[in-house]
Length: 514
Image 1 (tube, rainbow, N blue to C red):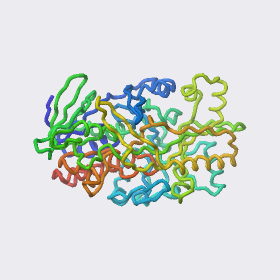
Image 2: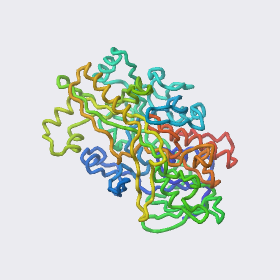
Image 3: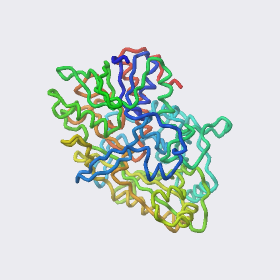
């Protein structure tokens, strides 16, 4: 195999795959490194016991908490990364999220770029990732130049009933922007079958708008793009003066090799990207590559997330595809308010509940599943220097994280229980997400204008290494309160244009080819 390329991209999640899609038409020789393999389509994709209890799509490796306790992270090492098992709720950050916001627990800092810088790329990312929605419903939605590329998904009868009940209470529920290949005006040719195994499951029919299906498969159709799976990046090499990256040391199914390129992009996810930079320490970068600020791995954020099983014992919920409704009436608030985003998640089934509670009587679980409506709550986690990821002396990943901004999150959950009580729900079981729920990881190589206070510049290029980029959730200065995936993808398109300009590639080469 040729070991010299123009561009190397490490990772195939929302950042890496979208960037590869943007750069593929340039004709540059591109190598994509992915430590995982292509996900095999199997009935296991839809087996709740295997997906949720055995976690067959999550890594077997164990990370450490700050106390030194082991935990198994919900980290998917697959082609497509964590998007292969995400719930595909793809919302833009709010326009106000890009400015400084004061919370009772601290400050959510302003970004060095504006919402307007990302808006055209949000538009394109929504098209690439098959995002269905309706402008004008969400009271906090940012301005958009065009409608959604795909129309909102219809609500099933029980969902429509609750939608109207919430509106009757003065709230503004909206159709949740969802990235799936579901075309209700042409069901005959619609890949999505609107099943109950979307949220948290890989898609057996390849209809989810994940990074592989939305972007990577199109990039790989270009003869100049190569992917190497089972290839774990171990270390980034640099020139003697440390100013330029020259290549990557890779372990490919147990065999060590080195590949080189003129431009290197790290897109391994906020945690593993930071770890790779730390592992790449050298005489010129003694604290880790591009880490003179000491901020590589710092400011880790992962949202305050909770799930709720709300049960109306007198009314069944036969909904199959439930994840179609969101509520942002409480997204922003003053100190003392409930604050955050609320949306429905995938419908709980007897099998899913049994995977979580295997000793519970199946008849009880069946009744709960038949009568439940299932909610997700997200409140912003704030950046703190002490929250971060480090490499231990024995080479293990340690995640030092204590959630911030918990009080408004708990008030949000409590307030929603009162609202649900008004519309007939009598049992509400809530579960906060623990440290192993790392799907929303951001912030470990923050973007900024001051090299002493940031790792990356506004083009996601490291301040210290002139041809090294980090293009995933690492760059987030703040976390907002929505899934970061769409912003990661939109930013990857933005950085794709920056890289093309830097490489002198003609502007007329479009990043939107599908």
